[in-house]
Length: 394
Image 1: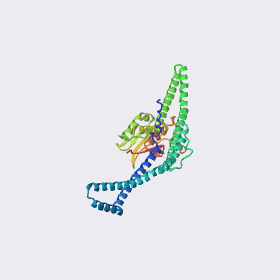
Image 2: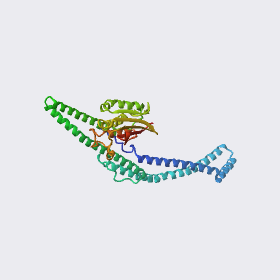
Image 3: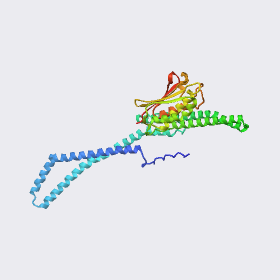
């Protein structure tokens, strides 16, 4: 068995992934963008104010008058250069004052932002610590759900996951317990008959022990196969879209496989439905479901002193496919009908032995197709009928 691989821990420190750093940097970037916008707006306002300022106009008029009195170009250039230097210095002082005021406000705003982000993520850290403190076998619900709406939903989803894990483990424990109980009898029979076979002399006693041993081995093999099938169905993942196949051909194959058994019991098998019915379907799941329902009808509803007919009918109803499997046997008592899908349950009035898993497997298989199996009346007011219904895939 391949050991599980451990998920590598994320790098710690400043360069590791961090929600707090990402949130804080995003807020600071937003502030920097606002700062740049404010600076641009202040510059535009300042330049417009200069263009319309009467003092600037008077200064320009005075400069023009002074230039008119100068005769030498060098003197005029010196005067203009000096005036330009003075104006640029005044403008720089105004721009620096505006930028500095906004820049000085950044630390004053950044500190509350850092505290707000750190405090806001603290419930997440507490939830992480609560989960990390649990042992591998502790599947109880979380003791303290965070009141914050976002984390409350996360914690509820985690509790739902734990609930599914608890249910899964409970099913596994029940399956192992029941399987051990059910296998104990055929294993004991095998051991006993093997001992008798080894000690018995040639003759009827040896042949009888050999026959009993064969039946016990077959029963144990059938039970093991049913257990493996049930475990596979319970662990089955979500199904991919299936390829279109002919449902009627599948049903004919299913009946053909049991034709010899039915003939030996004197039972007539019949199929009523369209000639072909092309549908996207999972052959393995349907074969398992239909086969177990048919086996149940032949084993418990038909044979000497019981029913003589098993019918399959197929039709479509809305967006569903319906297959009805019915016999005309003794039926199932009303007080027992609620238990027919339980694992390992067998009616005390059963006409033959079985694993008690067939109908459970059928229900699980159809359930994976998004459908269900229901119990109802059988043929001619007698027997029992099972309706297998599932939606037509995409």
